[in-house]
Image (cartoon, rainbow, N blue to C red):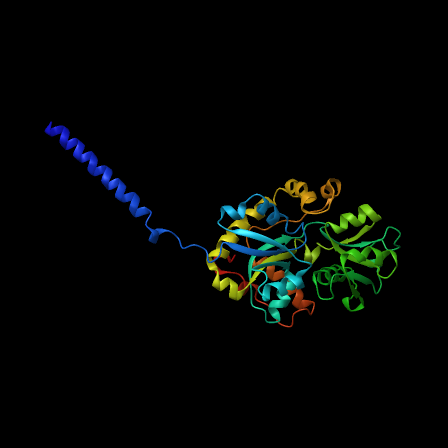
Length: 323
């Protein structure tokens, strides 16, 4: 009986110690502090470039990370940056050209992730089907339709035309919305139009447009087109929330490695039909920020006169994500 009592007593002591261990591990002091906010307003644009984020929101990727992401449609990089700086957005999608130009002009930005890197024919110069020019070198003092005079289209089309001996000073860039570029081509108001997907495929499918030059060639091959950014103030005030966002964004971007999945998602994310969605040319979706890759954009901008001084892109990348 005394032996049994000692066994039971010893077992009780073990269980008590085990219980204490469990209590110690779940002490509030051991738990990581919660994010400063569990809701982030994220501005999004071109559906192909932001497809992984849209798919990830549908599939609860951000919610599993402890965040609720509210997607806010933006008409362009300029509008997104305005909404970001006035506090209507927490994270904004924009072209890297727009982001770096804003940073050079004094807007303190921090990159939260890359969005999209160009692939073959994902951005191009297109001409109408009856155009006399068949090669980029056939253009003389060309008029090129672009989104804006100092934007991504100006930078990349100028670079591509430079490789065939066309001086950028001889080029007239005509800014305007994507929806009007095909009309401008047919009316003879411009000689070529810079477009990105899915508008290239739509122009080919609906109007018989031809690709005159792939703008992801030479100095702009695998060119970083766009990223997600926050203001420096918001980044410093919400380090834990944005760390969670970057972690979930990396998972979202990895979804983009499955191009079939992206193409299948486009009809529900946009007004593209399944046939058109299956034909679009896709680039890649980097899971992490690569400062060296992004520096190419800033250096090309400086060489083209879009930036007066060299912009150090590494200074815009949060330290833990620096690569």
